[in-house]
Amino acid sequence: MEGEPWVRFDRDSALDGVLLNVLRDNDLTPNAVARVSQTAAAVRWAAHGLGMTLVPARTGPASSPAPTWLSAHARCGVPAWRD
Image 1 (tube, rainbow, N blue to C red):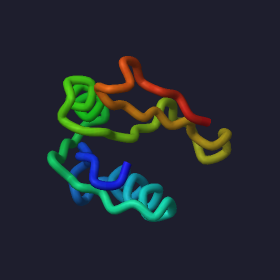
Image 2 (cartoon, helix red, strand yellow):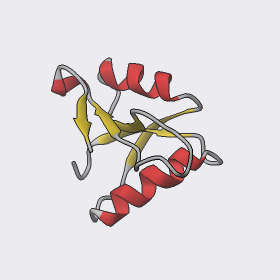
Image 3 (tube, rainbow, N blue to C red):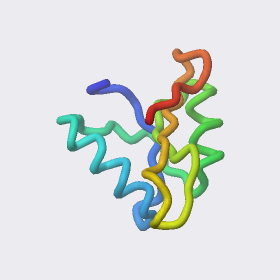
Image 4 (cartoon, rainbow, N blue to C red):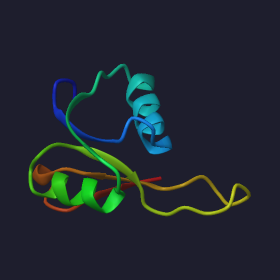
């Protein structure tokens, strides 16, 4: 995934911080090609081939289990779920 284009979130978004941490934890440097403010837009843009993205598939209160993450990329054909 290194060097691949990424659809990221607005710089002040908590989701962008999470995405950046996940990528850095995996020794990846994102090549941001676009920034969005909504997760639905990130998934749509990724599905249309603009780049990859990572969004929470579900959210809940802090006491709920850890979120499930959804990665989206046009080459996947369908989004891939990851627990």
